[in-house]
Structures are given as C-alpha cells and as structure tokens.
Image 1 (cartoon, rainbow, N blue to C red):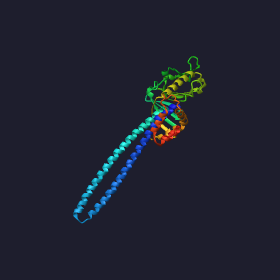
Image 2: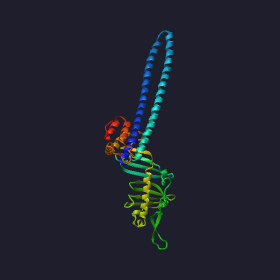
Image 3: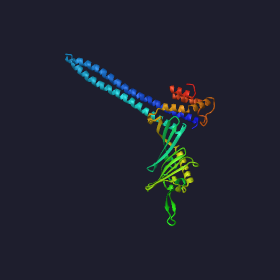
Image 4: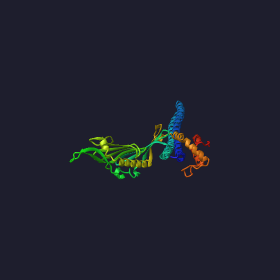
Length: 371
C-alpha cells in the first residue's frame, strides 16, 4: 500500500481502534473502582454498626427494664437498617458495574472492528502473505496469514463462499484443464513393451492448498479409492520447478524423481493450471471477513491487545514515509490517490480526536508541532 493510503488508514481506523480501546480500559478501571468503593462502603457500614451495637450492649447492662427493652428493640431496628443499607449499596453498585461493563464490551467490539478494517487493507510492508484453503464437510475453510515489518503478524478468515471457485469442491476441470499424471508402468498385452499408466488430475478434488509468493502447495484427493496427488511449484510459470507426488493404498511415487515418468508429464499444462490456481487464491485473499489471530512479538487474545503499542509499531515502521508525506501536504502538495481527502486540516483534526499526551507524541512522529 502507498504511504498516503496507509497514512489515511492509520489516521482513521487505527486511531479509532486506539480511542475505543482506551475508553474500554477506562470503563474497566471504573468498574474495578466501583467494586473497591463498594467494599469500602461495606467496611464503613460494619464499623458504624459495630459502634452502635456496643452502645446498645451497654444499655442492656442497665438495671432499668425500660432501657433493656429499648436496647433490644433498637438492636432489631439496627440489624434491619444495616441489611437495607447494604442492599441499597449493592443494587447501586451492581447497576453501575453492569453499565460500565456493557459499555466497555461495546467499546472493545468497536476497537476490534476498527482494527479489522485497518489490517484488512494490509497497510504495512509485507514480508510474507500466505493464503490457505482446506476442504471440510464439502466446504472450504480459508484464511490468509500475513507477516509485516515490525514483527506484526495477523490471520484473517476469508469468505470462500463468495469465491467463484472455492464456494464448492473444486476440480481442475472447472478451470478447463484435463491433465494426466503418469504414476506407473505396465506391460502392453500384445507388444510386451512398458506403457505408462496415468491418473487424470482433473478428476481429483482439491483437498487443500497453500499459496505464497507465487508458490503453490496443493493436495488433490480422489474419492472412493484413497488416491492422492500433491502438486508443488516453486514460483512463476516460466522458470519455476514443479514437484509431483502420487500416493494410493499400494504405492507412493515421486513422479518428478523418476526419469522414466517425467518424460510423460505435461509440464506446461501443469504449470499453467498451478498458475491459475495461485491467481484464484490471490483473489480469495482479498475477501477478508474477520480477524482470527494477531501477534506483536507474541500472540495475544483479540480482546486483550495493546492498541497503543500497535500504533507505536506502525509509526516506527512507517514514520519516515509518513513524515515526508505530511511535510509535502503541509507545503501544499496534494496527497496522491486519496481524492484530496488527506489534508493538513484533516490530519490535525484526527490528532485532536486522539487526544492527550498520545496526540502530542504522534504529532512529533509525523513531524508536526504538538497542538
């Protein structure tokens, strides 16, 4: 992603994720304070009640019957009053806790959605991007795994059901390919010569596939007899190598390691089919649905992420590019590919929305004076 588009994503979705997460943390702190305040109020109530109980106990020691009877009545009233006061305090605290926790949960959800929107656009330089599909109960489960500069890694679930190929079990015949894989030799009945035996790859169903950097690892299964064919490519269609393995209940054959079989492999057709499959997986990788995993140095639960640390890492990685871009914008040069929406005023407004000391430190990272 270009620096201008990345900066806009950072100013919007990532800033929002930080704001929502900060608010959720503040609400959770308020909830903890409410629990502490309730315990304090209970302790004070018990202390005051004990003082009055001691006073009533001294009245019981009086010789006059009237005072003794009065002390018993007051003791009963005191117990009732204490219980009522505790219930009132409990109800008030419970309502406050429910409010704090409910709003905090909502803010956490908004923070996660903002973070999803941010990383769905792949705003950071990517070291490796892997797209995987796996057939399960006649449906493909799909995910993308991305490693970025700065040690950030994240996985997204992909919408395989919205793909033109992966919404149902896939065979290469759906791509228009009829590929025969030589897997054995047998003797011709009349000539007694050895003839190759083929398996039609287009009749096999794609069981799993993984694509990264133009490379492909794909496993195809043939229902009914347990036969499997694995296809591995090292890169682009022109100069990459192809690995081809066949397995059934009787034998396991590395086709490309057998010179007598390699001669019968249609490498051009195989590379073309693999290239098209890589292209379809690349298209599927754009259909992100939900963030599944996230790690910065180490994996953390999605509802327990340190959004400020994520923002700081992004600024460390993209800081020089962002700073150079903001300098040009401040000088009056429009930011490319942002429909003139990325202006100095817009940047300053977003920084103001971020608020507090964080706004000042981010302003410095962007080369702007702290507002």
